[in-house]
Image (cartoon, rainbow, N blue to C red; front, side, top):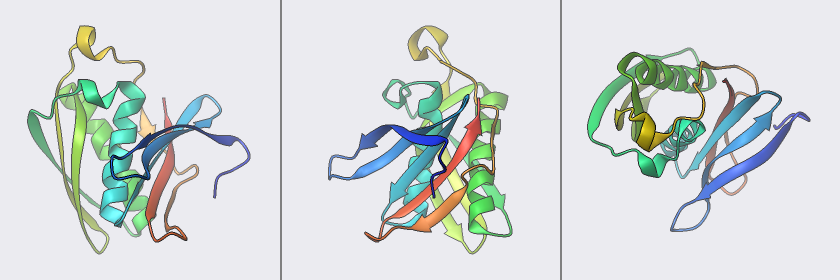
Length: 155
């Protein structure tokens, strides 16, 4: 559930209708969320929201694939680990991502992120995301049957 200090600020709608990802205002940090028909799609869309904190995803060409694997004791911690793995890959490889694929098997995640090296003039990165936090961390099925995954990231 969204806390009192959190407000919806932006969202992205998919061509087939429905909001797929967005940001939540949370003090000096920002929350990211993704929605999908499956938990995997919600995780993928939250990956887009994470990268949209840094730049507009449309500016990032999905040229190179990076493999990501995570394991955690529950789905919420797995979601935070997924985002932290993406943050690590963006920092270590100096890349930005725009497309994601996630496969969940129990509390294990195998994923792939597609992107390209940062080009400051073209991507115009706004901020550096430092870490996904446990604040507002939630993975849940909504009343309409869609899955939602969210948490606050430290910027």
